[in-house]
Image 1 (cartoon, rainbow, N blue to C red):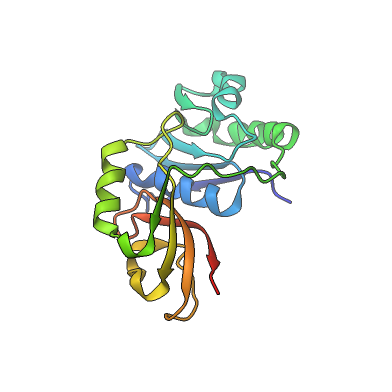
Image 2 (image 1 turned 90 degrees about the vertical axis):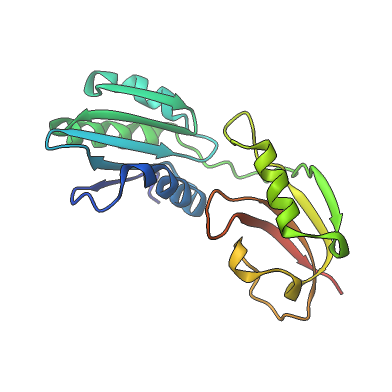
Length: 196
């Protein structure tokens, strides 16, 4: 099983401002460290990295800093710039580091719920306002988690949610909801349970 994914957008199809969002999406989906690079100009590359628990990007970059122009960030979200001719060296070294140091956390931890709301009081616009009050989110400021109890599936607006439950509309649910940094789908359903 691959322990790291590195992608070089050598045709500059991705805007630099979206690299972090792309890397975040892939890291969440595949639960491995992700590095996305694109060319700033002919000789300089910019990179954004994201990763799950169990891998420290800043420590990894410290080990290869002689190949980088600069780097910064924190353990699960970092970035760097480098000369294009260093790309192959960086890939090999990061693959070795991930192979030796990345171990997926297998134990599921209990989830801390910040707020519990009954389905009849649920209002997605009010929840969105609450999330915006607490943002920006990062390593030391995680988005709050809401437990919405006893809500009909058809009361949720499908377009607003990542991981929307594909089940019948007339189903009652309990859902664990958090914020997802995306304009089209600002919420993420972390988990749900069908209620009898």
